[in-house]
Amino acid sequence: MLNVHSPLDMHVHLRQGDMLNLVAPYTARDFAAAVVMPNLTPPVTSLAQVLDYRQAILRAVGESFTPLMTLFFRAYSRAELLEARPHIIGVKLYPAGMTTNSEDGPADMDEARATLAIMEELGIPLLVHGEGCGFVMDREALFLPVVEDWARSFPRLRIVLEHVTTRAGVELLDRFDNLFATITLHHLLITLDDVLGGLMRPHLFCKPVAKRPEDRDALRRAALNHPKAFFGSDTAPHPLEAKEASGCAAGIFSAPVALPALAGLFEELGALDRLQAFVSDRACAAYGLTPIPRQVRLERRAWIVPERIGCVTPYLAGQTLAWQVAG
Ligand code: NCD
Ligand code: ZN
Image (cartoon, rainbow, N blue to C red):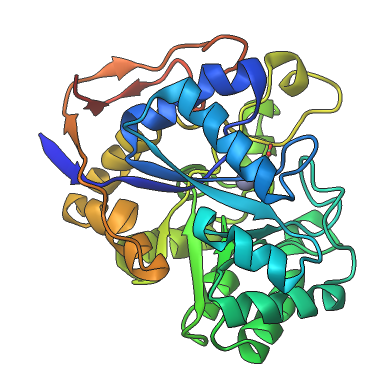
C-alpha cells in the first residue's frame, strides 16, 4: 500500500468532444490536478477559450479534479495576459510544425521575446516544447541554445522544458535557477530501440522521439533525484486509425497506467519513497502551488492493462502491472 498526496500530472492532452469525455476521467481518477495542453483545433489562444475548455473538462470529469489551464503561445499584449493570469498556470510554446496541432506556433524564436518579457514581468511561467528544426534525434539538442538564451535573458521567467528526453537537457537544469523540466513515464521506460529496433511500434511513437539508453538513464536519475524535475505524462491519445496508419500520429495514451507504472518503476529502482516528490512536491515547489488535499492510494495488486479503451490503445496494453489505484 502506498499513499500519494496531491498527485499531479504536469502535462496532459485531454482533447475535445467525445475524446475528452473518453480520456479525461482517467487523469481525474488518479490525479488531483493536471496541466492541460492547449493544442486543440483551433488552439486555445484567448481567455474565453480557456474558460470554455475548463468548463468542458469539468463536465467530463466532475469537480474533484482541478484542471490547470494553459494558453497556446502567440504574441499576446500585456492587457491580455494580465486578464488571463488568474485563470492559467502558464503559456505553452510550440515551435511551428514540431508536433500535433503546432502549426500556429512561432517559426522564429526571436519573435517570441516581446511576449516572454511580458510573461516575466507578470510572473507567468513558460512551458516549452523544446525541439528545433533538424534531424529528428537531434531536435531537442538543437533547441537547447534557445532555452539557454531565454533562461539567461529573462532570469525571473520560470521556464519548463516539457518532456525532456536527453541527458544534455537534464544537465541544463543545473545551469539556470529558473529552468525546470517535466519527464514522461514512457521516456523513463523506452528508448528508440523499443520503437523501431524490432517490429515498428506505432503506439510507442511520440514527439520528442525516445532517445538513447544513456539519455533514459539520465532521465531516471533526474526523476529520482533532481529537485527541479517532475512528472508530466504527456498522455496524448489518438484514435486507433490515426496510430495504425501509413502516416502515424505522434502521441502515447498513458493516463490509465501512469501512476501504477511509475510506482512499479520506482519500486524496481528501490526508490518508492521518492515517488511523492516526483509526482507532486517538486511541481508544487516549481510553480508555487499549494498541494490539493486529495490522497490517492496505490495497492500492490496485479492487473492487465486493457488492449483498447474506446477507440484508443493505451500505453502498456496487454501488459501486467504490479500496482493499481485503489477503489
Ligand atoms: C502530442 C499530441 O498528440 O498532442 N504528441 C506527442 O507525441 N507528444 C503533442 C506533444 O506534446 O508533442
Ligand atoms: Zn504534449
